[in-house]
Length: 383
Image (cartoon, rainbow, N blue to C red):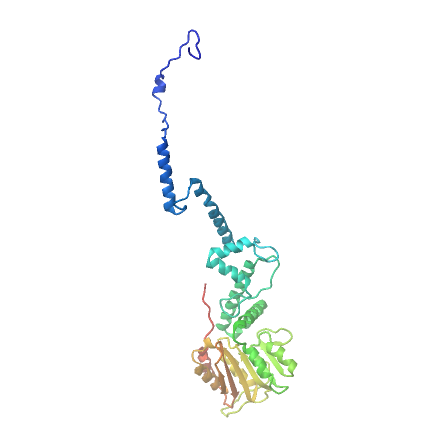
């Protein structure tokens, strides 16, 4: 008896035409042999890829578990990339310590990020045209932001330095007067630059002049922040400091390549003399022969020096086209070379003595100025 037997109703036992013509795809009924074969093929493929040892009972699910550490590494890589982006977002705590996870990811990342991380830990490097300058730290700056600010300071110093080498001294003074901050930035950069040199020529002169008799008068031309005067005044030596701008205490403003506010004279005839009225015993030019008219500084040194006075020059080695040509030019202004010290890898020291000479005619002086190319300007690579 049918389950639903209602009088007058009949239910056919065979499929209806609609059911017979249905386009639905019937699922294939897999036999146990098919499943075992597929499982064996999958196991073989996994072993070939090296994820599972041949004798292990692997499962497809184990492959998915492998993705978790990859996702963490990828996320760490993205975080490490954030360190390279100059952004005001603080990635480290206020105490300056780095997050352990970020630090680990940087070391795992490779040479570029590891180098960046190590640079933040090191003290500011010394002299190099490539290296950053010390800056006044502001609260809230990350190590990356501080490092970037130092690099910008270094680039600014190199720009000013090259400008001074390639301009006339009058142009340099005008530039400093328009923006006195340029003068401060330059000498901040210079102090940082000489830190990596084997020795500082100013320190050398401080040590040497400390043995001079008391009351010796020393003129420091291109003195910068007057380090020579600050060190030697307490030792009863008289140091007169001159540079493009005055600091109101030690430094007197002057164009050292044009005219110094000191007494002295030059010969007025062909008769060889050493001039009159001078009060200076020693003139120092420590890395200060910078302008295109730098021979004028040598001429002023001759004018203000006492008869037989000394001229001390320290100059960067890389600037010389030929040291003999430089010595020849200084000799033609009225000096005799007494000593040359080129043992230092960064700069050469010269010691000259003033000698008598005749007047220098305008035509002769123009010829001397045209030889100023014996000292090359310091130039820096553009990046």
